[in-house]
Image (cartoon, rainbow, N blue to C red):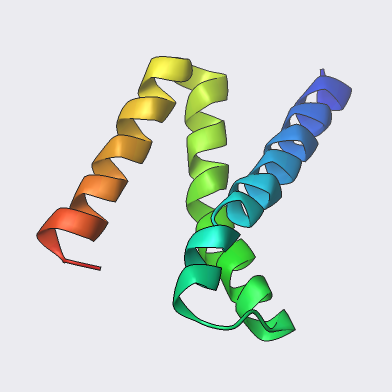
Length: 81
């Protein structure tokens, strides 16, 4: 059981990093890419990516998608970022 749990958290961590890297083109459109900017994007997008991965694991794809949509709605519409 512990091995399965560790494997799931490793998978969530890897997917969170990929989620963060997937947002890199948006950052590149605004600023020149530097190693610091890439790390910032991976970390700041990877944290919610890990949350979404945990939701996917525990509650399913729909819960993760609704959480991602809700976060985007708040960040881009309500806050205006």
